[in-house]
Image 1 (cartoon, rainbow, N blue to C red):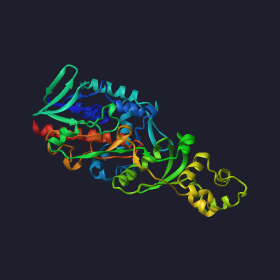
Image 2: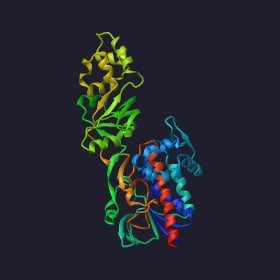
Image 3: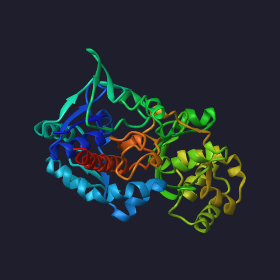
Image 4: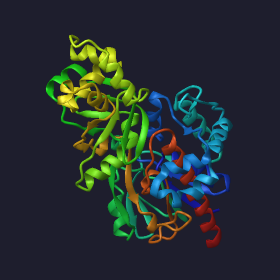
Length: 402
């Protein structure tokens, strides 16, 4: 029986363990933290978004430049397949109003508990507090509470995560060990992140923590509806995350980054101009915006913060300003506090089965690979799909080696 190791106890690693155990291999999974699935549990604190219920062709578009290397894995494990897999664990799911899919319990812990029970039944050995410390010849070096261990396996699957939320285990400490072996690794960058904006002290004092609802925002990523939050250091929230890759890449290129916000997407510029023109001239600017344009205090304040001249504009120009408020991010938030990361093992260094070209018999999956996707279930979907695909590749490898 082939002896295989999986390093990393996140979704990709756990899914790979299931596939390999089902195929009859002896599977040992190593996790540096005291327990597995910590990032999954953290993601589930606000309701575990498992996947997205949009049609498969639309889902594929969320993976950008990495799609050609991810599509085969995603085609083999679709969002419907993922939901069926959850059901097989006794976890029923539902589709929310935004087409995001959640477990009916809205928590990650029941899913993880059922999953670990299944892996235990299949004979998967899980060793926590075993931190991978690189290679020693053909052996793997682990730092453990009992001292260093050197272990050998017939094949290895790495599922070590990216560089976000390092306190949960994804600290990218593995990068120099793979680079030393000739594996190409793209620098990690924050993804699905907030951005720092130089707000005035008065704006921060009055509106930090306030949501802007029912708006649209435009960047090179397109025009997207949603909501976001202004806080003491800038902006964050699902709508910002949808634009984060475009804004980040502009800043990295030394170009100005602008998030263009339409505060009233439900009304045309012409309609707004007419409504504003009907307001009595004696009204204060705030009341004019509230009565004529329906702007709540935070939207009105954002307009004045980003366009200080707005209160001197005539109705036509003011309407145009309301439809196009430029927020100018200065930098993304630090990678340690963002939802996910871009960068990682370059696909040019992998074969079509997710094996590292420089390290025959070593496979990689999940967020340690160089891809990114917006929030909405796309991150977990691809992590699970690549975990399965890399495991299938490993199976083919050990069959040939027998």
